[in-house]
Structure formats: structure tokens, C-alpha cells
Length: 250
Length: 208
Image (cartoon, rainbow over all chains, first blue to last red; front, top):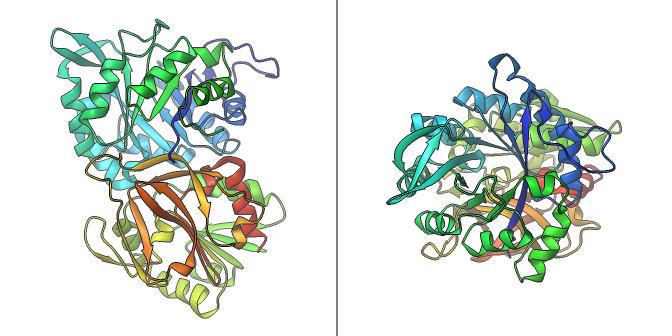
């Protein structure tokens, strides 16, 4: 039976993990490579890096991080943030990323998704959707949630599936950072609208939220801060899901 | 010993390279090349494959003499070869992804889309699934039955002769996920992304 995935996500800026972490065994808490290794040793089903480096001159730092991580972690590695072109995707894959997530570029130019999925295969193309509730559903935003687009999230999700996306990483902007749980209605709606796997993101504060995310129809749940700050380990999360009869890899 | 990972522009093979280098350390030389002479002289060959069946077959055919060299290596000389994902699928006579495409024809059978039972199952089949070992395979030495492996695929290899099947996995139906026929091995899952269990399979192949 296919297991539901737990994916810890690390925000990386200028090659360093952004938020502080409390792991005892960590020599360098800001080192994304060591952090990723701890997650994969702890049973993470995949690792996700979100590069939030702002300045262009430091953008190359992520390539080095991906290269080093892929030589130490032997679970799938997804990298996103600032991916603009087929060439950016190619570079990340060559450094050892297994999947690349595309956000703004997918909205601005769906051809990037079409071309890259044809070139590299759908399995490595994840479209990241940042969605916010409005009067008649959810609207997507770009540029890390700064720019409003007027595009309906459900329609966009279906369009991305047709363009060749292998997975959708859906983040609720209303919930992100609140620790009050996923927007399960959004996850449920998008999961039903498409036939590709959905990764739920944004809002996890407790282990029950992970359970809710899976029950809403997502194939995988992504979380950052609960693992970041050591509130829970990946293994604790998995044990908890298993205790709620949710199939996970233990 | 030399193990060659065939680099034929089949998409992203960096994880395959990293995992083989991790397992091989200094004991075994890992070559990544499409150089025909290097392939001929190597002890073992790994045939990765990502993207569509057609794109991988086209890429193989795009390198002059490569298919002949692989035939000579695996069929005439019977040296060990491991196909991963589409690398395994290409052993078939024919594949139906995008358009009907001829495969290597090493193991009679076809590659067709997984039956998702009218949308009941999502495709691609992505994530960790357990393998059901149905036949002793040399690459499964010390691998427990029901071990988890990482999968990413929408198509499955269906060989005519089921005796080549060494493992299946349960997703909408029993999907064939590993085969062994004499010196030819293949996994539909990605051992290079399947953590320690996956590395053990790679190590078993290297130690053959």
C-alpha cells in the first residue's frame, strides 16, 4: 500500500537555514546539509528546500547546498524558490535535486511547466500554488505571496495538471505561519479537482493537523516550524499518524 | 571492478551517480559515460531512465552504436545489467507512452499505463510503497519482504513470462516492480532514493 508522506521543509537564505533549531547533535544549526541529514535519518519521506535568497548575486549558494545534500541524503529532494526557467531547473537537477518546485514562473508562463515536464519528465516538476481565500473561493498569489493575480486556484490547479505537473504543492496563505492547521477545505477541493498528488502546506502547529491534512485528500503533508523548532521529530509525527490508522512508512 | 552508469541524456541521473558512489566508496570504480569502449570493458552496467519511454528510447538510439553495445554486453556476453525505472521498462518489446515505441526487446512484454480505476488512484504513483518479494533475487539479499521503496511512475512493465518477476507492489493492482532474468536486473522503484534499503540493493548489485 502506498504510504502518506511527511515532508519537512527548510527555508534557506544565502545558503543558510533561516530559523534557529534546537537539535542537540547539530554542530552547525544553520547548515542546511546537516539539518537535511537529521531529517532523513529520522525517517523523513522527502526533504524540501525553499530558497528565499533575495539578492541575485547570492542565488548560486543554493546549488552548493543541493549538491552537498544530495551526496548525503538518499531520499527525494525537492528544491524551490526563485526558479524562473527551464535552465534553472536543469541546473538544480544536475546538482542533485530530484524535483523542482515552480511558483511564480508557472503562473507567468505555463510553457515553463510544459517544456520542463516534457524535457525532464513530470515526476520532477512540482507546481507550488500559494492560495488565499476570497469571496468566491481561492485566488493565487505570486512572488512569495506579494502579488495578487486574480486567478482562481482550482482552475489554475487543473491547468497545471494539463501542462504536465507531476505534483501540486498547495500552500494556504491564510493559514501559513498561524500554526492553526491546514486549510483543509482548500486541500480537499484541489485534491478532488486533479488526479495528480497534492502536498498540503501552511499552518501546521500540532500532529493532529497532519492527520487532518491527509484526511482532506492530500497525498503528503509538508511542515516547517514544528520540525524546525524541535516541537516534534519526524519520527514522532509518523508514530502519531500510524496511531490514527494513517498508513506511513515506519 | 568497473561499474558504468550509462549517461545517454535520459534526464536527471545525478541521484543515481551519488548513490552508487556512496556505496562504492573506494572499492569500485564508478564511470558515468556513453563511451562504447568503456561500456564494453566494464564489469557491470546501470541503465537509468527518467521521463517518458519514448524519450528514453530516442535518447538511446541517438547515440550511435549504443544499443548494439548494450545488446552485446547484456545478451551476448551476459554481464550484469541493472535497469532503473524507465531503464527497466525499456527491456520490453514495446511501450505505449506518448506513442507506440519499440523497446530493447530483451524481455518479452509491454509497458502500459497503470489502470487508475477511473481516477480512484492518483497518477503518477508517487511515494513509498512496500514491495512483495515473490522470487529470490540476488539484488534482494538481506532485504526484508515488505520493505519500503520510493516510486515515481505512471507506466508499468508487464512481461509475458511471469517467472522473471521478483517483486510486486500494491497500487490499484499488483504492479510488477522488480525483475531478474539471468544477468538482467531491473527495478521500477528508485533504489537510489530509497534510503538505506535502497543503498543495500545497489550494494548487492555491485557485489554480484
